[in-house]
Amino acid sequence: NAGVTQTPKFRILKIGQSMTLQCAQDMNHNYMYWYRQDPGMGLKLIYYSVGAGITDKGEVPNGYNVSRSTTEDFPLRLELAAPSQTSVYFCASRWRAEAFFGQGTRLTVV
Amino acid sequence: GDSVTQMEGPVTLSEEAFLTINCTYTATGYPSLFWYVQYPGEGLQLLLKATKADDKGSNKGFEATYRKETTSFHLEKGSVQVSDSAVYFCALSEPRERYGGSQGNLIFGKGTKLSVKP
Image (cartoon, rainbow over all chains, first blue to last red; front, side, top):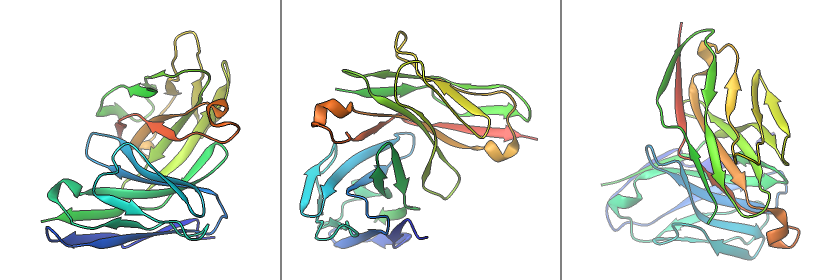
């Protein structure tokens, strides 16, 4: 019963590098989300998807891209990492009123 | 736009003390309201929810009542334990009707860190 799985758990990137944060869910949920959590700032929505092939921007999409080729997977791409992207990233899926979160990816850009 | 405001922490209590964490919201229409909890090193978990006015959500001794007249959803627990130490997030879901029948996105407050001392 995996739920929402995020990889990696930790990553250090140099400025200008690229990486993909992986997110997979096995609950067949249509709705999926990417949030970033900065200290004392709560969660901010980066991108979301309402189903395979459909994505849309959230509150803070700049510097990120997503794709949703299958119901299960919702990867988040950072093309040119910047120190401002240092944060903890959470992926979530949703069924009706309840959201299910992964354990997060702690990303540091140096 | 819609927003959630919750009391700032950190909140430090002794074991068996009474807990209140205030949460107010701004929304058009009738959102659903939630409390999520984040234990150290983990993702968020749903603690309780209420989907309409005057509903009371409850779980693990925590309660919150959806008050439309005061646009509030305060979290309470009568006797906290050390194991309740965590960060608590109030959240709302934009009204279903705005999306033609589909669920809206979740909007979170900034979180309140609770530390319970033995």
